Length: 112
Image (cartoon, rainbow, N blue to C red; front, side, top):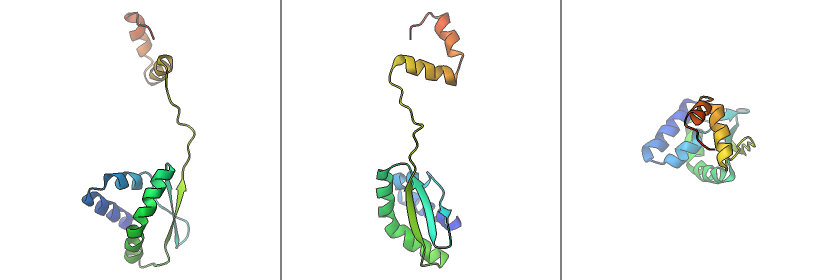
C-alpha cells in the first residue's frame, strides 16, 4: 500500500487527474503474492487502467521486488443507481434528504 500511495503521488504530480480519480475509486486487493485485484466502475475506466498498466506494473514490480505480479481488473456493476427525471421524482428524493422541504412547499403554497 505504501508503494501504491507513492504511485498515486507520481500520477498526481504529472497532473493526470483522470487516472488519479480512477485509481482512487478502489484499493487494490492482493489475492495471493502474485495477483492484485482492482475494481473499476465501467469498461471505459478498465480500458484507461489497462493503458496505465504499461507504466504501473514495472514500477510496482521493481518497488516490491516481485516480477511475477499481475493485475486483474474487474468491472463493478452496481444497479443501485437510479436516475431522477420528473419534477415529482426530484421532489420525493429531496424529501428523503430533508423532510422539512415539505413544510417549505406548504408554507409558500408551491407546486411540484
